[in-house]
Length: 379
Ligand code: SF4
Image (cartoon, rainbow, N blue to C red):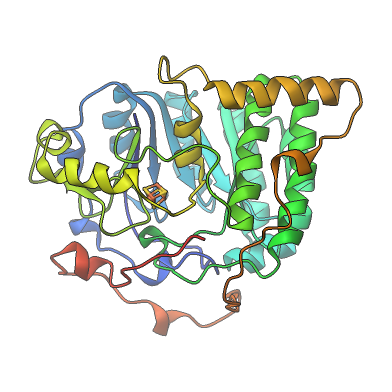
């Protein structure tokens, strides 16, 4: 099982597609080390995310607590405070670190509202690499404003000797947003094709399966069904900053329990969990973010093996690329079927005065108070 610990909703980026920064938590209310110590061992991937996890003063201690509980421990960071990660990388060089990067300097800084973000991330990732980090990379949220730079960012990551993880615009309680829609779905989807081909051309098996994951992103961008059904709650879960455990980070009607008040065993065997898993089985959202896609692609026999469907797709298309043939995307994707969605202008916050927009999430008791937006549309 994969687990994401959303360690805080404090964030020092000002992204246009995620409003966590407008809804910061207070440190004393955030999920504690004591609570996280209750987690059992044996997770496949344990991601410490946010908000921005480096804003937690106790991040080092948090990593020490969680590292022994998972095969892979990951930190998803905006990369604006790379020095905070230096002692962690020196102690645990195999920790997976991903820095959000949305394109070239102008594009990244504009989308993420970061004054010097681009250069800080680049310098930071190089510093962590020199300190011995072995699993470093960028993470990019594909949107209209940066889709044409996808291959360029991938090549840049390759040049640096690091990875590139991709996701797309999404609506979810985690992002405090329900109006992230593409302006031109067809155009954005076509840009992902170049990345898929580039990934299949490499000699890294991991990249070939990432190519399949990106095929799923094309389906998501166009508003189609998922390539493989979602397994939220059984193959992955999220813990929010108030210690509430959720099957996923999208729907507010999929709670599993609360780790501060219950044991992990109580949560996973509860009536609440059963009800939530039933709802997941009939969920009609088409989420395809890294966690939901990666877990869906895994074989039921072993988390290290892929399911038959992605395996066959990879085999066939790797052979095509090897023999110099173009991929036949029309065979897999119905480009004639593109869902319509509202056109909501995204606001870039770089250089904006944003103080008035930030509302501290303090002394709120219930999940309903924590997440006033209740419905999220990912079609
Ligand atoms: S498909 Fe449904 S259950 Fe799965 S992550 Fe999305 S909203 Fe959650």
